[in-house]
Image 1: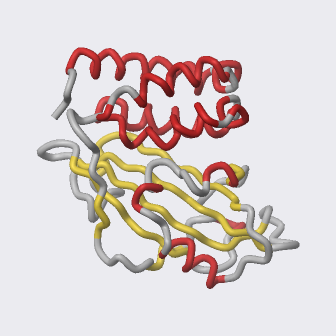
Image 2 (image 1 turned 120 degrees about the horizontal axis):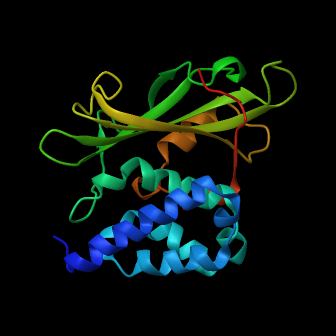
Length: 221
């Protein structure tokens, strides 16, 4: 349960306003002082534990505090779940097999081989769930399908009524992000290893991968 309800409500309001500004204005996304101030608020509220990895890195790393992609990614997740921050911890658990399963064709024309994915879900209320599908796949840099292969990560977020059928039972617009990871000469084994080794703590924020990730400019299918 929430330790300090008034502080929690005010912090949710501050966080939502910050996220909207960061997504709307590049100047806000790269304002290190503003982002650090918000990170301090986040760390002061135990119920925002899912945001703590982002906040800790923004406070400790001047480059990340002013990094547009890093802060807009965090803001985008805040907007996705803004009215669903529960009065307590958002506990994600794996759905289905703990082993990666086929994710199919998710990378559009750039994808070269089958993707692998894992699914995580957290209960939001009586009839709603937050679901995150995390998938990895090999792909080219562009639709011309020429040159080197890269390792991509795709995160897809849902608010739904059935965590095993999130796409069919979605009740609010979700979000999807593709990132090209910095890995030399990746192969299909890397797709499996990255997916299998993904820690639960990295589902919402990418404490290990995000600083090395480059957002893809390709459109997923």
